Image (spheres, rainbow, N blue to C red):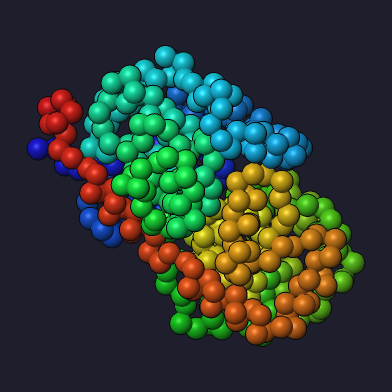
Amino acid sequence: MKQEKILILSGTLGDGHMQAAKAIVEASEICKPGMSVKVIDLMEWIHPRMHVIERYCFLQGVKHLPSLYGFLYQKTREATPLTALLKKFRQSSLHRLLELIQQERPTVLVSTFPPASAALSVLKEKKMTSLTAVTIITDHSDHSYWIHPHTDLYLVGSQEVGEALLKKNVPLHKIVVTGIPVRPSYNNKPSCKKQLREKLGLDPSAFVVMVMGGGFGMIKGTFIEQLKSNQFPPHVQFVFVCGRNVKLLHRMSEALEGRRNVLLKGYIDGIQDWMACADVLITKPGGLTTSEAQALQLPMMLFESTLGQELDNANYLTSKGVAVWCEEDRLPEQLQRLMDNPAMLQAMREKAGRSRQQHAAIHAVRQIMSQSAPAVKYGYV
């Protein structure tokens, strides 16, 4: 009998899909040390020469035409002939995916990336595989691009998403609320924030505001201009995480040179210590970043977004009372209002503690393991 093996299909169009996959890998080491778990970037595997161009075009579209992206997202929220067309795969792509499955010989397939969920469903429909297909939805969304007829199990971030899937005729036995999987280390809050701040070079007595634009560092210029004009109180310390956007990091370094209350960082792997030091997080409402903040009970101010999945996330988080909207042209006064209202900040922390799904990645791994079956059933041996 072959050892259990999880094959995770993910993608890098958005940073959250891959981060969720990595969280599953780390949680599997806790749940069952030695179990084989492999993560594959689906688009890179299928189109090794094209995936960089596809990723670039996607990011440019999100950056320069966010309203169009948001419009298309809403138009495809429900299943339509257009969504059916978008979910189609070329036969060559399906055969490339089948090659991967036969090469890796997993006992269960997991997707954290909508196109991967679609591809696996098509493979099962065409009887090209009978492996169990598990989809981890990495946003608080019930968008049609996550939902496919031959998906065997959906792991969702909240009860609200589970109920929304039921309304879309997904059977109850296929839905489990685990929470959006974040790395297990996010469940361990530091015992002494003061010491951690000193270790990271932060002022222990400052009001620390962390600013994240997602893994690709989408922070707008209006924010930078407000920092240059010194509209914020002197005891506020900003930590800007520019992600992989090297140009933004250099631009901000030049614009904010000499300002001691601003610390600029590029991409940080294992950012939980920085988030644990903060009093408030200002961020775009990506599913993984906000779930990480919720796990740490960190109050959030959310950039306004026209991107569909981010709007879904923001509506969920604000309804739970763990986040407020952030208007960029009124940021100083909105931040000041929070600073002047410690009771509100404390209430946001407490609501985050009540609404978060603790140990989401570990719960997800246990559900995935329950779906794994002996490889001999699938003709591998």
